[in-house]
Length: 131
Image (cartoon, rainbow, N blue to C red; front, side, top):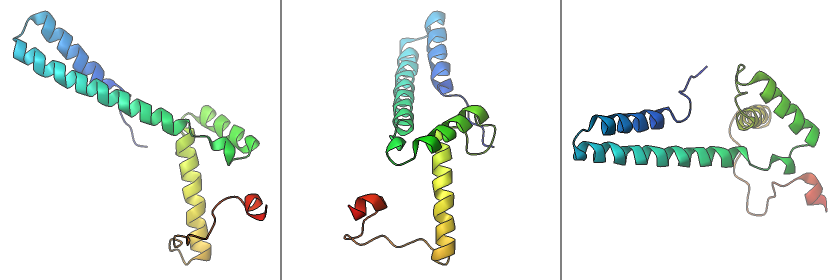
């Protein structure tokens, strides 16, 4: 399983370095350089966190049955990343959907990707198409 450092490690290191150099009284140009890099790292970390939260907050309730969604959330919570594809609900959902699409391509399209539908084709639910 791929290991990545916890979120914010680089930012914490940069802030700690800045404070240490400030305490040691190094030259101003060094403090300015480290300070600017620290601000950039903090901004990048905040942006990354915002993107991660927006992905996790997608409204899957509108296209997944409530019971299935509850079971998926329970599995992610119980397994907590110890099993592949269970680090987050997003990861589990992405893996499950990709696996099913690959199975459908293998069974019904000789393993090739399906062509993009024409403008007139609909990809919504069957109940919406019939009504």
